[in-house]
Image (tube, rainbow, N blue to C red; front, side):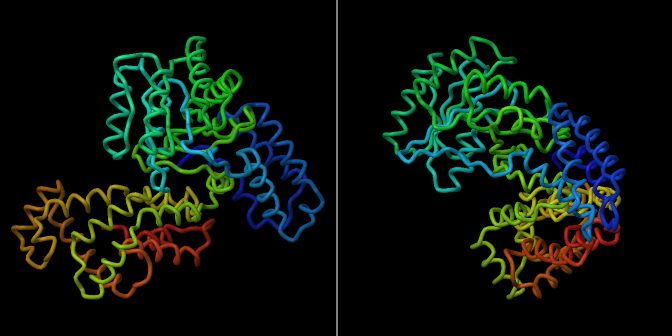
Length: 467
């Protein structure tokens, strides 16, 4: 999860407040002190931390809070609201031109994940009905053009490039003509980066900006670099003028300082976040949702959006028909399993529902369950996937060897598949078999207190995902 360390510390603070029928001035001071330490450890700018904790103290000490029936919850709300304000308050969208093509210029230092983010953004926009063109203007980094072309082929998105020249203005100008002739309504220009900001880099970006006049300059920063990422954002904004920020590596062991500081320092919104290595691992940045995630309150809206994107409607109808006819095979099971994997890890799914990090940790969830299940099915022949009843001892031994596991594991998996088939038959609303599992898990979660989750509760929530 993003901001794992920061989130854990802030959740600890929040848990002390929950259920408190009385909050004193001393309690508020202690909470502000703990929040301050948590933010500083997360590499958040000191001035921002000072302002943030001052606002919390001031509002939390208000008479409306201290004299309310639920003062603990009121203080939590104050912390949440201030965190949303710090992250940007409202969701910010791309500046789209009313007269296509919309030109998006990607900027950032070398190693920030700029080229990959360009591909992810193109992929996201294509899913929304756009017809993007990627433009390779990083002419200095070895294999940068090749990398963009490979991404273009993987995504089936055209890439304009010219390896014979280093004149990026010429490349971009010709790319725009190409976009107009091919009716590409979005042009995403991947620019060169450096290991650090220098005059030569900025001059090239300024020339490019004045020539192509982008509707959006999106700065890509590596969130794992902490305060350095904020300094980079500030420098780019002062010299080039940016419209927004895309944070990469939010799935890593990041301290979160960049996300919590960049809006306050630059005044520019975070528009996107990269949450993994795959081309689908990009999210629109919602400050309110990110605040609830950091405080361990879940993010069900994002989970629902991910589920709607992952679960194909036509495939869901096909699976439902097969379930009704008792024709749900291991191949179908594998297809549904892969759809759930698109949502992320079981831990991240539980986090989005609002399950406390400590409770998830205590449950000792084995994320390799999906991998083992997939390996077992892939070690079977198509005939065996269609009819598991033919799996005798010899076949099961061969499958276990192929999957790198034991016969006992294979037997356990087959039993789980059989049980799941029966469960799925009685759950005929939702998007596909695994979609029904998700719906079932979320329904169970409604009847549980996410702040006092026991190991048994976690096991109940994840039982359909264990093989």
